[in-house]
Length: 96
Ligand SMILES: [Zn+2]
Image 1: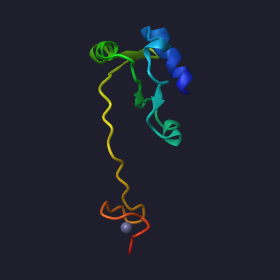
Image 2: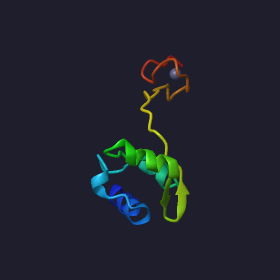
Image 3: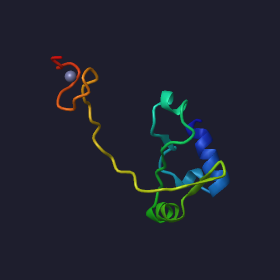
Image 4: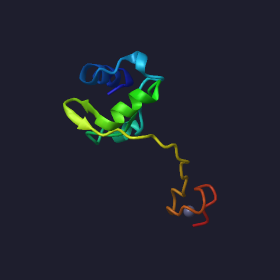
């Protein structure tokens, strides 16, 4: 799955034309994760709030499945320790 394929599916199944979008669709999971799942989050940025509100209300269809749409909320990534999995320090400063 690529952003171009997602864009084509959004157009063919939902009537979302490229000119409605501010940016190409963005896949929000790592590629290695995508290989092991059959669904995942995609960010679609509409140019105007009316279009965004419409798709948040009715959702979208993707390959025949109904998908929910909701606001994207940017959050700060938590970089915990990959060594001991504590969230209080980074891997570089781990003392274990
Ligand atoms: Zn640690």
